[in-house]
Length: 282
Image 1 (cartoon, rainbow, N blue to C red):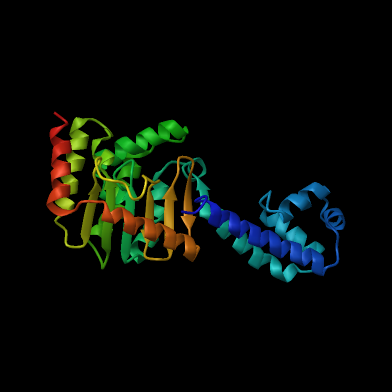
Image 2 (cartoon, helix red, strand yellow; image 1 turned 180 degrees about the vertical axis):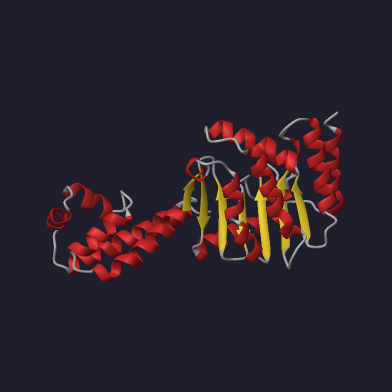
């Protein structure tokens, strides 16, 4: 596995820093001379060039102007913004509430033909009932200290899940058995959610596997991740969403999904585990 799920974002920032350093050298400027032209301290120039401090749009424009390379500024700014989108802090994403975050990924969901999803903590968003989603999102908002629009965000999440029933989409989903047991909301909410999973298993385009508590592990429990075809992996950390697009890293998540699939149970065995979780609710 990769050393850090944010490594794609850092690699992108380092590539931008390398390009900026190349412009400085082509202009035959020292770091001190460039800092003088930009009106910065030499330390700032050094931090940007070593990818220790992300460059802002204004920083890139000033750097390119100082190097006589104004024509390259917009391309570098676009690349820099893309790097920023790879690692997005939840508090920043949810600063105005969570509904917008649900809506922003709709185009990605509509464009994806094959979804591969692994979750070790909660039911994947696309499989959640509205009551379960509202209970979970309310808890997240309280923890993050962001506006609680959990009811409208949950409704948007359900609307986003129409891809399960519309268009040419295929879904392979893996849940750790713990997901069936963790209590999100009250007993009625959990019973409704688990019953909904049983209903979704009947869909011809949905494959749902459960990794039992007792299985011999070939892969340790991982952070939740979503694979959108073979072009992107979205990883959910406590503090941030990581969007991986580097082919080698996407392939690593695909490998993990394949190996996790081998220790999961499907069909009748998976339905039995879900039914046992419903019974345990009392």
